[in-house]
Image (cartoon, rainbow, N blue to C red; front, top):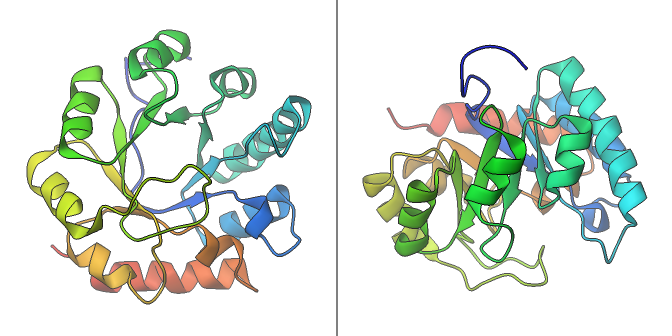
Length: 221
Protein backbone atom coordinates (compact mmCIF):
# COMPACT_ATOMS: atom_id res chain seq x y z
CA UNK A 1 0.00 0.00 0.00
CA UNK A 2 1.45 3.34 -1.02
CA UNK A 3 1.32 6.75 0.57
CA UNK A 4 3.03 8.30 3.53
CA UNK A 5 3.93 6.25 6.54
CA UNK A 6 1.08 5.73 9.00
CA UNK A 7 -1.66 7.22 6.83
CA UNK A 8 -4.03 4.34 7.62
CA UNK A 9 -3.40 4.30 11.36
CA UNK A 10 -6.21 6.65 12.37
CA UNK A 11 -9.03 5.16 14.44
CA UNK A 12 -12.42 6.71 13.57
CA UNK A 13 -14.40 8.02 16.52
CA UNK A 14 -17.72 6.56 17.61
CA UNK A 15 -19.01 3.06 18.29
CA UNK A 16 -16.56 0.18 18.06
CA UNK A 17 -18.35 -3.04 17.10
CA UNK A 18 -17.06 -6.50 18.06
CA UNK A 19 -18.37 -9.85 16.83
CA UNK A 20 -19.54 -12.35 19.46
CA UNK A 21 -21.49 -15.08 17.74
CA UNK A 22 -22.54 -16.94 20.88
CA UNK A 23 -24.37 -13.81 22.04
CA UNK A 24 -25.90 -12.99 18.64
CA UNK A 25 -29.30 -14.66 19.03
CA UNK A 26 -28.64 -17.30 16.39
CA UNK A 27 -27.30 -14.90 13.77
CA UNK A 28 -23.96 -15.49 12.07
CA UNK A 29 -21.06 -13.09 12.37
CA UNK A 30 -21.60 -12.11 8.74
CA UNK A 31 -25.26 -11.26 9.35
CA UNK A 32 -24.30 -9.23 12.43
CA UNK A 33 -21.61 -7.33 10.54
CA UNK A 34 -24.01 -6.51 7.72
CA UNK A 35 -26.43 -5.02 10.24
CA UNK A 36 -23.64 -3.18 12.07
CA UNK A 37 -22.63 -1.53 8.82
CA UNK A 38 -26.24 -0.72 7.99
CA UNK A 39 -26.59 0.97 11.37
CA UNK A 40 -23.52 3.13 10.88
CA UNK A 41 -20.68 1.52 12.86
CA UNK A 42 -17.32 2.79 11.58
CA UNK A 43 -15.05 0.22 13.27
CA UNK A 44 -15.61 -3.53 13.44
CA UNK A 45 -13.39 -6.02 15.22
CA UNK A 46 -13.58 -9.74 14.51
CA UNK A 47 -13.20 -11.67 17.77
CA UNK A 48 -13.62 -15.42 17.89
CA UNK A 49 -11.63 -18.07 19.74
CA UNK A 50 -10.02 -21.12 18.14
CA UNK A 51 -11.90 -23.26 20.68
CA UNK A 52 -15.16 -22.19 19.04
CA UNK A 53 -14.21 -22.12 15.36
CA UNK A 54 -11.63 -23.73 13.08
CA UNK A 55 -8.86 -21.57 11.67
CA UNK A 56 -10.28 -22.18 8.20
CA UNK A 57 -13.68 -20.85 9.26
CA UNK A 58 -12.09 -17.83 10.93
CA UNK A 59 -10.23 -17.04 7.71
CA UNK A 60 -13.36 -17.49 5.60
CA UNK A 61 -15.39 -15.19 7.86
CA UNK A 62 -12.68 -12.54 7.95
CA UNK A 63 -12.39 -12.65 4.16
CA UNK A 64 -16.11 -11.93 3.82
CA UNK A 65 -16.05 -9.25 6.51
CA UNK A 66 -13.09 -7.56 4.81
CA UNK A 67 -15.11 -7.38 1.58
CA UNK A 68 -18.12 -5.90 3.40
CA UNK A 69 -16.12 -3.38 5.41
CA UNK A 70 -14.00 -2.27 2.46
CA UNK A 71 -17.10 -1.64 0.35
CA UNK A 72 -18.64 0.40 3.16
CA UNK A 73 -15.50 2.32 4.15
CA UNK A 74 -15.49 0.72 7.62
CA UNK A 75 -12.25 0.10 9.53
CA UNK A 76 -11.69 -3.64 10.06
CA UNK A 77 -9.65 -4.93 12.99
CA UNK A 78 -8.85 -8.59 13.68
CA UNK A 79 -8.43 -9.72 17.27
CA UNK A 80 -5.24 -11.72 17.95
CA UNK A 81 -4.76 -13.38 14.55
CA UNK A 82 -1.97 -11.43 12.85
CA UNK A 83 -1.67 -14.03 10.08
CA UNK A 84 -5.37 -13.82 9.24
CA UNK A 85 -5.22 -10.02 9.28
CA UNK A 86 -2.37 -10.13 6.79
CA UNK A 87 -4.12 -12.65 4.54
CA UNK A 88 -7.31 -10.58 4.27
CA UNK A 89 -5.55 -7.19 4.32
CA UNK A 90 -7.38 -6.02 7.45
CA UNK A 91 -6.76 -2.48 8.65
CA UNK A 92 -5.19 -3.67 11.87
CA UNK A 93 -4.92 -6.08 14.77
CA UNK A 94 -5.95 -5.85 18.41
CA UNK A 95 -4.00 -7.82 21.01
CA UNK A 96 -4.25 -8.46 24.73
CA UNK A 97 -1.66 -8.35 27.46
CA UNK A 98 -0.80 -12.05 27.01
CA UNK A 99 -0.71 -12.02 23.20
CA UNK A 100 2.14 -11.07 20.86
CA UNK A 101 3.74 -7.78 22.01
CA UNK A 102 2.94 -4.61 20.09
CA UNK A 103 6.46 -4.37 18.64
CA UNK A 104 6.27 -7.89 17.21
CA UNK A 105 2.84 -7.25 15.72
CA UNK A 106 4.13 -4.02 14.16
CA UNK A 107 7.07 -5.88 12.63
CA UNK A 108 4.71 -8.34 10.99
CA UNK A 109 2.02 -5.88 9.89
CA UNK A 110 4.21 -2.99 8.80
CA UNK A 111 3.87 0.70 9.58
CA UNK A 112 0.62 1.43 7.75
CA UNK A 113 -1.60 -0.81 9.88
CA UNK A 114 -3.37 -0.15 13.18
CA UNK A 115 -2.19 -1.94 16.32
CA UNK A 116 -4.41 -1.80 19.39
CA UNK A 117 -3.68 -3.14 22.87
CA UNK A 118 -6.01 -3.95 25.76
CA UNK A 119 -4.97 -2.25 29.01
CA UNK A 120 -6.27 -2.43 32.55
CA UNK A 121 -3.97 -0.13 34.53
CA UNK A 122 -1.90 3.07 34.24
CA UNK A 123 1.31 1.03 34.00
CA UNK A 124 -0.02 -0.94 31.04
CA UNK A 125 -1.23 2.24 29.33
CA UNK A 126 2.18 3.86 29.68
CA UNK A 127 3.85 0.73 28.34
CA UNK A 128 1.47 0.75 25.36
CA UNK A 129 2.55 4.30 24.52
CA UNK A 130 6.23 3.35 24.71
CA UNK A 131 5.61 0.23 22.60
CA UNK A 132 4.04 2.27 19.79
CA UNK A 133 0.40 1.16 20.00
CA UNK A 134 -1.99 3.24 17.90
CA UNK A 135 -4.80 2.97 20.43
CA UNK A 136 -5.60 1.20 23.67
CA UNK A 137 -8.60 -0.60 25.06
CA UNK A 138 -9.58 0.73 28.49
CA UNK A 139 -11.55 -1.60 30.72
CA UNK A 140 -13.47 -3.50 31.61
CA UNK A 141 -15.27 -0.44 32.93
CA UNK A 142 -18.02 -2.60 34.42
CA UNK A 143 -18.19 -6.34 35.07
CA UNK A 144 -18.65 -8.37 31.88
CA UNK A 145 -19.07 -12.02 30.90
CA UNK A 146 -18.39 -11.77 27.17
CA UNK A 147 -14.86 -13.15 27.65
CA UNK A 148 -13.87 -16.22 29.67
CA UNK A 149 -10.53 -14.74 30.79
CA UNK A 150 -11.80 -11.27 31.68
CA UNK A 151 -10.02 -9.29 34.41
CA UNK A 152 -11.79 -7.46 37.22
CA UNK A 153 -13.68 -4.28 36.37
CA UNK A 154 -11.51 -1.16 36.57
CA UNK A 155 -14.37 1.32 37.03
CA UNK A 156 -14.13 5.04 36.32
CA UNK A 157 -10.84 5.57 38.15
CA UNK A 158 -8.69 4.14 35.38
CA UNK A 159 -10.85 5.67 32.64
CA UNK A 160 -10.46 9.13 34.18
CA UNK A 161 -6.71 8.61 34.54
CA UNK A 162 -6.38 7.72 30.84
CA UNK A 163 -8.40 10.78 29.78
CA UNK A 164 -6.06 13.03 31.78
CA UNK A 165 -2.72 11.35 31.12
CA UNK A 166 -2.66 9.40 27.84
CA UNK A 167 -2.63 11.07 24.44
CA UNK A 168 -3.40 7.88 22.48
CA UNK A 169 -6.95 7.26 21.27
CA UNK A 170 -8.71 4.74 23.49
CA UNK A 171 -11.76 2.50 23.36
CA UNK A 172 -13.83 2.18 26.55
CA UNK A 173 -15.08 -1.39 26.86
CA UNK A 174 -16.62 -3.82 29.30
CA UNK A 175 -20.18 -4.06 30.56
CA UNK A 176 -21.27 -0.86 28.81
CA UNK A 177 -24.98 -0.68 28.07
CA UNK A 178 -27.44 1.83 26.69
CA UNK A 179 -28.32 2.77 30.29
CA UNK A 180 -24.77 3.78 31.23
CA UNK A 181 -23.23 4.89 27.93
CA UNK A 182 -23.84 8.57 28.72
CA UNK A 183 -21.60 8.33 31.80
CA UNK A 184 -18.74 7.03 29.66
CA UNK A 185 -19.16 9.63 26.92
CA UNK A 186 -19.36 12.50 29.38
CA UNK A 187 -16.08 11.40 30.95
CA UNK A 188 -14.34 11.98 27.61
CA UNK A 189 -14.50 8.70 25.70
CA UNK A 190 -14.48 9.16 21.91
CA UNK A 191 -14.73 5.43 21.15
CA UNK A 192 -17.01 3.04 23.00
CA UNK A 193 -17.57 -0.68 22.58
CA UNK A 194 -20.85 -2.34 23.54
CA UNK A 195 -20.77 -6.05 22.74
CA UNK A 196 -23.93 -7.85 23.85
CA UNK A 197 -25.99 -4.66 23.72
CA UNK A 198 -25.34 -4.59 19.96
CA UNK A 199 -24.94 -8.20 18.80
CA UNK A 200 -27.83 -9.42 20.95
CA UNK A 201 -30.24 -6.65 19.97
CA UNK A 202 -33.43 -7.71 18.12
CA UNK A 203 -32.69 -5.02 15.52
CA UNK A 204 -28.95 -4.34 15.44
CA UNK A 205 -29.05 -1.55 12.86
CA UNK A 206 -31.77 0.33 14.73
CA UNK A 207 -29.95 -0.09 18.04
CA UNK A 208 -26.75 1.33 16.56
CA UNK A 209 -28.62 4.27 15.10
CA UNK A 210 -30.08 5.01 18.55
CA UNK A 211 -26.68 4.63 20.22
CA UNK A 212 -25.06 6.96 17.67
CA UNK A 213 -27.73 9.53 18.44
CA UNK A 214 -27.00 9.17 22.16
CA UNK A 215 -23.28 9.47 21.44
CA UNK A 216 -23.77 12.72 19.53
CA UNK A 217 -26.02 14.14 22.22
CA UNK A 218 -23.76 13.31 25.16
CA UNK A 219 -20.30 14.06 23.78
CA UNK A 220 -18.44 16.62 25.82
CA UNK A 221 -16.67 19.44 24.04
